[in-house]
Each structure stands twice: as structure tokens, then as C-alpha cells.
Image 1 (cartoon, rainbow, N blue to C red):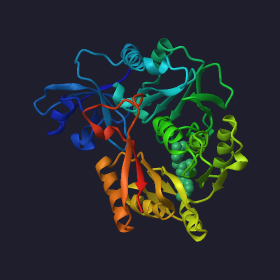
Image 2 (cartoon, rainbow, N blue to C red):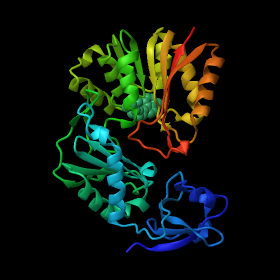
Image 3 (cartoon, protein in one colour):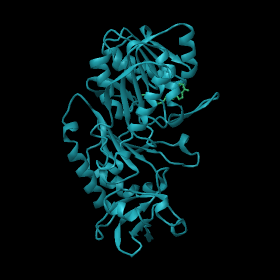
Length: 398
Ligand code: SAH
């Protein structure tokens, strides 16, 4: 039985939560009154002891838990999760009915009413991601509700919170008939190989779907493309299918070579006609400058934080520098696709990084297109800070 404790919310956070803000900030509560174990239900009240809502205690970088309901009579049980899942699936009917795209998100945390939990669909395989030990403590109810709501071949999970180093040995299979990986999913008729049981990542970041389509349809034809921080080369595949004369994919992780070959191969693209480099992007910039290499289309999609032997990198600090290096190897009238999923800053700040980099290099630019999260990555409309994805297509003018 889940424990419920009363927790007082300080001003001004109580008003915010009452209006529908879903995240409980650590500054909103007196830490001494927090429960011992994550997963406890929190009966949230204001300083006058008036009911605000019921939430749960779960530690993430962003906060200490999430509001689940503002209805004092609503219980947090299997029926609660089922109601949320049904609603989320209803909202995505168009995705389920689209035969050209068989991988998308069916449940996006706070955007669908349960912060800390996301569920992705990969051609009838489901991937549940848990972002705290707190939400994970509801796993029985969540899996019961999910199994009742969807027809699945199998369900897999990722624990995206500190499991004290047990992660590597873990099997991510939960229930159903285990898949034979990789499975091949479609995205706007492009193919992507996906593995749901091979470490932290699946092979494809679904939130970039519209960006991949834009690259294929409007930016790749006849172009020489560079894909930095390329991971499995998903953007390179989109560019090659869109008629790029050549793609170069650069990622420091050794596994990226085989994974990128695989993504090209499942799309019947001869990987030997493409360049795949296992290399630190910062060294690649130096290499490209030394050899006078220039590109018509450059994708820049770094992780928010990265540590290699040589350096640590954080987008919040180092993005302008990264862009300056990129500008130096982009052709006149070339396009830079600048992307970040760092939730700690918004579009305005991101554009100020872009402006700063172009000003410092005395280069003219024009923003030609912008993207944020696609519809299946539903975010609370009133609170743009949960819409973490920022992608800007920039033309270099001189
Ligand atoms: N753009 C990719 C996702 C990038 S994930 C896509 O759309 O699929 C971030 C990748 O950056 C990881 O694969 C990681 O190995 C790589 N990476 C991190 N630091 C790096 C560095 N200094 N140089 C090259 N790659 C790096």
C-alpha cells in the first residue's frame, strides 16, 4: 500500500500548482517534511491548509515530484493510469492510423498527466521510460493499466534514474513475446533499425521526426552534408534519401560506426559511398579546417552534456563556440541545422547563442525554419519550459 503524507507548499508555488503547473519544485517545500522513500503520495496543501492536489515524491533534476490530480477524491491506482493512457492514445489516433510512420510517442510525461513517465510505440513493441525511483514504485499499476489498454507484442522498459550502477546487466524486457532485434520501423517511409534491449538508447530519437523529414524533402538534394554528434546517423540517412551527394557522420562513440552502417543498409544505401568517422567532433572541426573542407548542410545536435577524455562540454555554455566552428566549415548560402534538447534554457536564449556566434565571426545569417517538439511529444501548452526541443535552420549569408 502506497504511503500518503501531507505536504505544505510554500507561496508563490501553491498558486502556480493550483493553476495547473505540474512540477513540484524543491524550493516549494520544507525538505525536513519530505518522506523517506520515493514513491510516497503527497497530499499537497497551501499554507492555509487548503487542498491543492495529490502528487508523488520522485527525485529528478527538475524537481522533487509531480502533481497527478487536483481532484481530492481521485485515487492513484490502476484505473487512474488507465484513464490517462486511454486519453493519450485517443489524442494520437492519427499516428496509429498512419501506415507510413510506425514509431512514435504515445505518452509524454507531464504533457499527458503523469510526469516522470514516457511510453514509446515501435511497431507494436512498447518502451516505457521511468525517470525516477518514485514513479517506478507505481510499476505494477502502470503495467497492469498499459496491458489492459494496448495490444502489444512486447513491453520493454528503461530506468532513466540512478540504479546504483546496476544498469548494464539489466534486461529491459517486461512482458509479452520477446522481440528479435533490431526491428525495423518506418518513419515517413524511411526505415530505422531499433533495439529496445541494448543499453540506454534505442537507435532513434523520435522527437526529431519532423526535422528528418524537412532535411529529406527540402534541404538535402544535391548537397554535401555533415552530421555532427551523429549517433546512429539518422539525419544522414534522411539526407541521403533526400538526394544528398554525400554525407559525413561524425561521432566519438565506437558503436556509432556499426550502428550507422546498419541504418544506411536497412535503407538500401551503400554505406561505402558515405563517410562515417569515429572521432571527437572538436577534432573533426580542426581536421576539416586544415583540409579546407566545406559543407552545404551541417547538422549540429550535441547532447546537453558530454564528457570525453579530452573535455567536458555543456550546451548551455559552449553552444556559441560550437556554432563558430561550424560556421567556419559551412559554404556561403549553406544551411546549419542547430539543435538542442537542453531544457534549462528556452528558444530566446538559444537564438541569442546563434546571434552571438554569427556576430563574432562577422557572418550574416537568416533563420529559415524552426522546430520544437512534434505533436506526439505532447507538452503542457501553457508552460513552454517543458517543450525542451529547439531546432533552428539557419542560412549562412556570406
Ligand atoms: N543527432 C543524433 C543524436 C545525438 S546523441 C540523432 O539525431 O540521432 C549524442 C551523440 O553525441 C552520442 O552518440 C555521443 O556519442 C556523441 N558525442 C558526445 N560527445 C561527442 C564528441 N565530443 N564528439 C563526437 N560525438 C560526441
